[in-house]
Length: 113
Image (cartoon, rainbow, N blue to C red; front, side):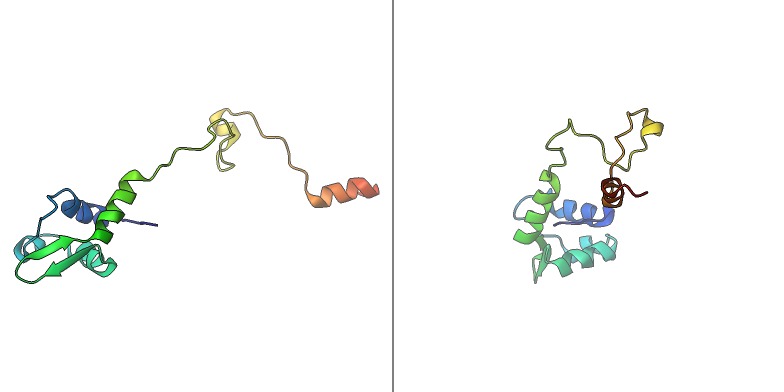
C-alpha cells in the first residue's frame, strides 16, 4: 500500500509528470526539500544514474499510478454511515440499540442485565 506524505507526493509528481526519458540533474535536485527526495531514493521510487541524473523507477511509477487510481467509492452507498458520525449532529435516524451477549443471557435466564 502506497502511503505518501504531502512532500513525498509533490516530489514523486515532479518525476512522474515528466517525459519517460527524463533525468533530473543534481543542480535541479538541490532545489528540492531533501527529506522527501531521500525518502524517494530509500523507497526505490527514484534512482541515480551517474552522468545522467535522477529518474523515476518502475516501482516509483507503479506507486504513482496506485496513488492516482485508488478507488475510495463505497461498494454499497445505501448502507448506514460509519458509527463515527453522531446521528444528532447530522440529523440522522439513530440506529437500533444492539443487544450484547450479556443482555441476551440475562433475558434467557430471567436475570437482570
